[in-house]
Amino acid sequence: MADIRTEIAGLKLENPTMLASGILGQTGESLLKIINEGGAGAVVTKSIGMEPREGHGSPCALELDGGLLNAMGLPNPGIDAFETELKIALKGDAPVIGSIFADTGEKFSILAGKMEEFGASAVELNLSCPHADKYGLDMGSDPEKVREIVGQVKNSVKIPVFAKLSPMVPDIGQIALAVQEAGGDGVVAINTIKAMKIEPELGMPVLKNKVGGISGPAIKPAGVRAVYEISGTVEIPVIGVGGINTGMDALEYIMAGASAVQIGSGVHYQGIDVFSKVNQEISEFMDRKNYSKLDEIIGMARKGI
Ligand SMILES: Cc1cc2nc3c(=O)[nH]c(=O)nc-3n(C[C@H](O)[C@H](O)[C@H](O)COP(=O)(O)O)c2cc1C
Image (cartoon, rainbow, N blue to C red; front, side, top):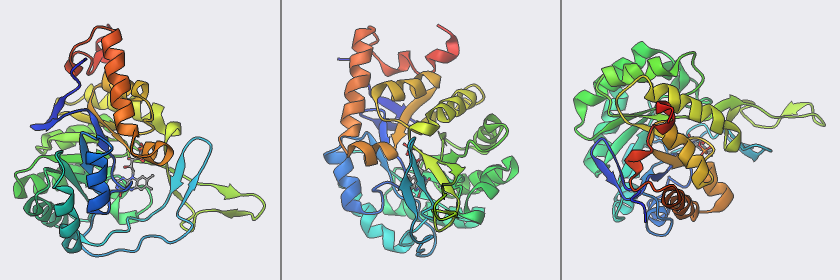
């Protein structure tokens, strides 16, 4: 069997699949289940902020033809209450990455420090939520702000710092470069893309927040393109996310340059078995093609082989 283990900024993963932030990531028990029963190589928590937050209210998510549309609005229990949940997730045998959001570098640093203190293996800075005003794209689309935030967080923790980016920028490579220059240890791409659904019978937007973000199969080509551009610009590892439901989907991201992938909506569509299924399909593909290690195919499409 092919060796599908991978490493990102010193984090050793038994396989390249991770749970993406926001899907079943708010309780310790669900994170643990995804590690123990789902077989994910790592899990990312729901994005956690300084204070408890309710989010946008219903309807906040719906299924469309090509994916899911959501405007959850970053509901979460706040960092202090999250300690208990994180400690439960840490009983599993896989890295737990703490996703955090804030509106200043200082607050990001406090949150990252707490995640480190609670035992998280790394932090993922959510710089890309498309439906939470000051907590998302305002910061993540400006290379200077990204540089400042990542730099501040790097100065306050020892665990690896990943930045999660949005594809809704003219040049995602430049944002990734700002992450690298500030000392960031990896880039995660992509978050959901701003979208909306209108119900003609009512003449109204369906989401309470009107605008949300689309995930799932519809965004996979945008995600693969983003990873391809990022990995052509920076040396730090890239984690690909967006529309992954099969091993072949994951392989597109890996060949575009991703060292690992995250799965979010795929858990909604297929349940937690999606991780072991995707891993199995990656292994079978590699065996069929006589690749023995994941390293051999990471970024393969860049080399034009
Ligand atoms: C219901 C829902 C909630 C999400 N919440 C978060 C979040 O809290 N933080 C974050 O960084 N991304 C969040 N995301 C984005 C996902 O982590 C992921 O980037 C995106 O959905 C694309 O991957 P997918 O197509 O596999 O779902 C959320 C996505 C969905 C569908």
